Amino acid sequence: MKKQLEDRVFMYSRWLRKRYGTKVFRVGLSTGITCPHRIETGGCIYCNPRTFTGEYQDAGLSIARQMARAIPRIKASCGDVKLLAYFQDETSTAGPISYLRKCFLDALVHPDVVGLVVSTRPDAVRSDVLEMLKSLKIPVTIELGLQSIHDKSLTYLNRGHSFAQVQDAVARCGKAGMEVGVHLIIGIPGETETMMRETVEWVGNNPWITQVKFHNLVIYKDTKLARMAEAGEVMAFGIQDYVPLLARLLTYLPGTMPVLRLFTSNVRREQIALGEYPGNKTKWMSLLRNEMNEKNVVQGQQTAVPFTKEDTC
Ligand code: SF4
Image (cartoon, helix red, strand yellow):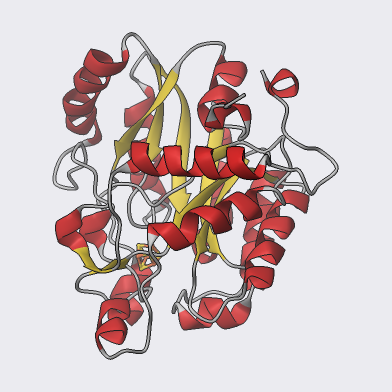
């Protein structure tokens, strides 16, 4: 029988329903702080900040104004959902502690906000920020850009941090009582499938990591990666390459770990420098569903805990 993707992958929406007992949606917010790594070094070679600034976000607006803009739209399309205040863009822990605290508290005053999600870099997880987040007495998730466990790849991407720094940041966030999510990039030039699998396995075996986002490497305009691709140094990694690879990699991620994202989202055609991404996210999800159906695999199949719907709902 043809199964849905939700029958084969532990989707984050399912985890949220279990955790909060109701439908929960993320409201994307911006502290307005520019990523220090971009200021200091020009940033990661794939980074184009225009690609991750959502339509609700506007660094020029106060948190209250950003929420006043975003929440009615979310409720109009999703109904009376609860919310996670999601500080999504740039490096959301890179500012003065008093400013960060004010941003987070301003988001928490909304009665429907049930938790906080803060996205940042492993080298920007300061102890004072963790202490402040703990003091808010609300569920907090820290999302860290991991991308790969291989230092060679981190250097190639100009991430500006090592794998050792990732390990340290993950452990400190976990010990501070935060949920820890990590972002992975699949398709980093020079990485073999074995290297990608090692990254997925490390994530699955880490005691502090509770959720994961997969991104296919997209070559955006106005990035160093685009200039390298134009010079013939990098090949584009299309959706047709990505889907079967992702299906295989998912089998090495324990079936109990929720997956927040399976594809780089918000890919707008006019922002892509190179590569074929026909269709949209719905189409890509159905390609992945078909691939997993055809191969008859589930998340975690190669681990001790394959995904089953019964265990996770
Ligand atoms: S850490 Fe994030 S925001 Fe900063 S340069 Fe890298 S991708 Fe861009």
